[in-house]
Length: 511
Image 1 (cartoon, helix red, strand yellow):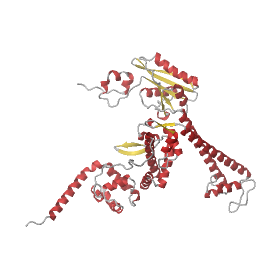
Image 2: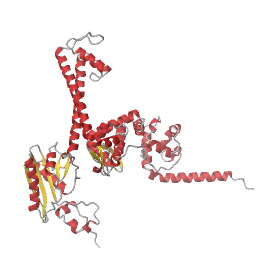
Image 3: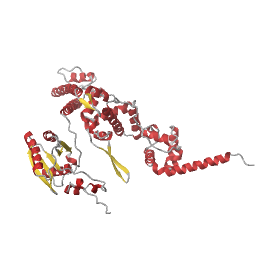
Image 4: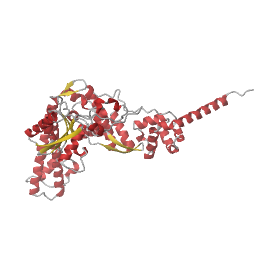
């Protein structure tokens, strides 16, 4: 019997009905995708949107194009036009009883009015990865997006509610106030330095009351004596600029505190989802704040961007959303590079700040692990990202289950099934281990199991004399344990022969 030919995506586009009519065609197809009945692509701009519809007409795929203004009536008219085309021109007519699906580019915030006017199930995609055609036009972009929508290139997006969007705006405004207030303080430092005043060495010119009093005295209408400061006065025109910067800093700092109060008020008034139900804002913030070095503000930032654990398939997907899951590039079975994806910048920043505090104090299990990793690798940023990833996983399960943080049943040590032999016998596998045997024994590491445990817990950083070459040897040994089984077998045979010889030597001489 002849084997069925595997069908390609182009076969499905030409005849989407083949999936339902001939399911056996896919018995030998390892990579098949479901093609939707239609596809809608929307290229967004500030003044108009370009819309493309791909729909079936018998065995053909036809396209319809439309351009609509971005006022509310125009956006609604664009949605109605799509529905009318699909009802009257598509053959067979698609099922429009469910939500309308479409693919839209995330150009600034121009896609949000489209999603609000069209409703349905949108997929929002970054234009940089949408894969536009070589010739760049709005019509071609919309056609490409419509094709991607029809063949399921991108996953459906989660659309946030009004409360979450409001909370995000408040958080963003607070961050802007803090940024601008910091910039004002830096400008004050810069200006007074130009005129010989260097009091900023002993403290902040805006936060330290004593230092600020000195600067305000120098920029007043009648400054006091110079003392041990620069004897040259600050010009009156510059004093006016400095006074303005101080007023700006104080105003922005006050606004930031007001926004912080409104942020907590909004977050506590909302109900947040767990895997099985909802919890009030006060309780959810309290639960998330039990994670090590995670404060209430970090917990609110987490809630505003994660929203619900049901959005993510697993903890790894959430870590990737936080920008903490590296994309590995491999060649010939080896990792050639690791690139950290962008992810959510506010979440990435908040979790990294908590991770840096954990590593700095290293009095928690996460912090001790991160500190040892930093000592072992010499890379502070890498260690902080690793600890932040652990925090993201922990907070994912805390939010999912609605329970407080606990180190119980948290496996911070990866289990490695390594055969147990004395460390001096590692030279049978790789002679380069010879120079490190003495250092390992001096630090109380006598077996390969103890060595693997010390490596995974990142406690080898305290062993002086173990450099990059040693860690490369050890990583290669742990990554290729299966290849070293024959060495273990030879080792066991040698040990068995030595034991038998010793037993024979210990037997009494026969008369």
